[in-house]
Image (cartoon, rainbow, N blue to C red; front, side):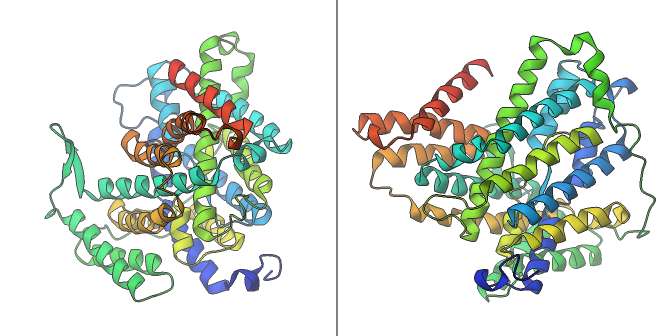
Length: 441
């Protein structure tokens, strides 16, 4: 096992990998609650039952698809990167496709399935790997830093430190609010542990926050540990009924399929590059075993759509596990095991609140923006697309949109500066695709 995962070469051990895997799971365990709530449109009143998915089935599909994706990533890609149904994509699935357009959720799952199969074909042909390796190093660093700012912004929001302000868009929140104070406490504890060089400081910070939260009554103590696993029958294989429905074959559905395809590709690519950079895997602007790593999300998405959930993608919260010491795919296997166990221990998940995960996201953001130092800011033609990639991600609340803006400006600034010969032809393809994306989206 140690030899397969190259423990000695990467300077790691079982303890670091297990703590890293557990940290990643705790940082993304919220998806087990958020995804079922989102896909079932639980917060939308007076909705016909036909438009609602079954909560229990979606929960099981979420856990299983996350476990399957993480196992494939761990065994084949050998990266400390976990997967689960993507947040932005599940919101698009539920609120835009099902609620907004009135599309049956079975049809929406069918769209996810088709886009995922197409992804799988692109991966098996090696095209996805070539597309990622064509991205210049400066933009890869920018993507990593941008995602760092993005997840820090998410952490500040979910903690209540930063809130909506109608006059200035954002503003400081009520720092005396109990859950916000718990997050601030978590940040301080984690910072102290990290500064002191404690391995797994992010993980221990979350555990301490959970204990303190329960002591002060901010986190509800679970009333039971084990519960019965819900049935998967309501959603399993439901997508295939859409293929016999003539209404499924329309221009609108084609647009939905392309949207799933586009957002997943660049969200996943951006996250993979960012976490790989953070862990020190990118060499000579190449990502080792990229094809195998990309296979994980393709297979997981196909499987997830059959089980009954939206598109599965790589999770940027994996960077919390890397910060805790994870360096190999063994950590992903640990995360996958946690997702499988969560099927039985769902009552325990209520202790992992946003007040607990927010400090981890904020601290990891600090670690990820270190890639800013690798960008040559003295070259304005490189600084502009890099800066726009970084700043647009948190401001647009979208990894894909940040990448799109930066990739549009890159060939423009390079051509104007007389460096057109240095542009990989694939970047021109990205330029056209992103222009069309903004025109038609």
